[in-house]
Length: 251
Image 1: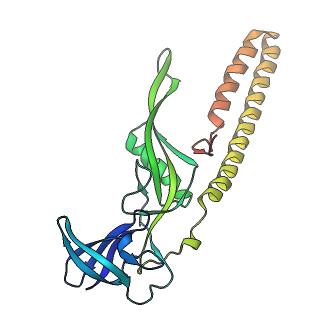
Image 2: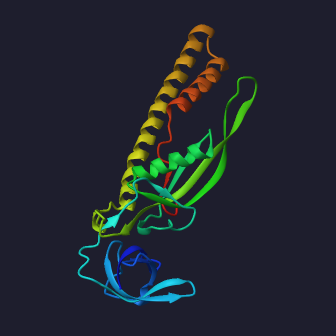
Image 3: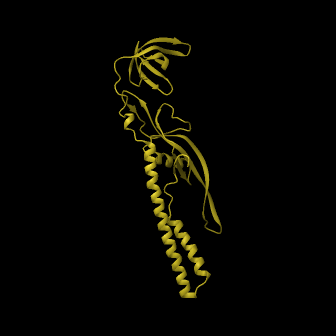
């Protein structure tokens, strides 16, 4: 019997062949004779066998040369709470952690995480986990308003499936850890820049308040207090954390 590999995961060691008779045959790695694992779309010859669990291929072998291995990749970024994404091979994994946050909803937090992982060149994330934190801001009345922040974290990966219809080679895939390190460096520089600008503006406001207090009131605690408060408010408004969403391994 001849047939075409309809799916095969090398990491799992099994897949299925669509036989020329229209039936689906289970294929285990132990039943395939070849130097490389079968790939989707590849033509195989095999002995068909009926088992209590369905049809199974035995003594499978390749018909002709499959050529260089290419991969199909997902059109949109995938995610999984497990260590792999069902139906896909993990071609490249990263120990970096990506975070996404939102005050609005868990869905918005997850969308932010997926967008950030995609910016690294990843097409999937694994070990997706949800957690909550608490934020605070000045309320409309007296006191401080506290609110829930929804968060997700995950590890970026590159996934694909070996296929005769694939267009991506494994060697052409971007190196996630290198891209993450380069992006982290750029984001840290933006955080430092906003911090320095915030400090400069805060210092200028503080000094202005002190000078004004001396000129108008002869100096005192009013200028110091007002300067410190206004300076801190300005710093808090200007300073931005650009990089903490991208966490290096073991940090």
